Length: 177
Picture (tube, helix red, strand yellow):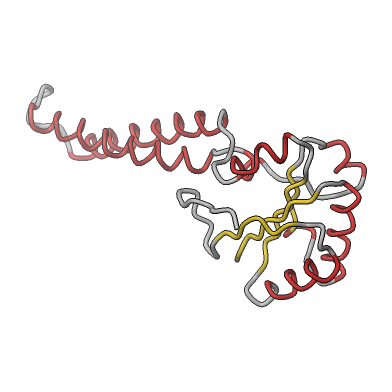
């Protein structure tokens, strides 16, 4: 599935875009809008974005888990090598140490991610702060051409600003078009 990013200036335009995409067979769950005007989106019954799109929870959670895993491996290896509790410690204890420290790293990374704007959406921070609407359209490969056709023919006021890969990878970067 590909995510196609469009920017538009007005709430009315955003509403017409979502209506036209619905008419073209794109479901409401595949259209998300980021805006500082959440009330306007709610009044027009436009599907707003979710926390995973707004915040960097996944990216920092994954990074925290990786760091935690490496620290856990180091700690378990250090304890196994130095044997401060004697030579009779079962291996499950070392696995548990790695698991607990990995989980702690993922948790700490998630907390950092909750406090951070999504790296991909941060490219459009100034546009959103200026009152523009960022429309994220998730399209299967066979619907991609339909989305682009509807947007080109009916909504020239909306600017195609980015496209994300078919596989959602929170560690990848997004480039503006």
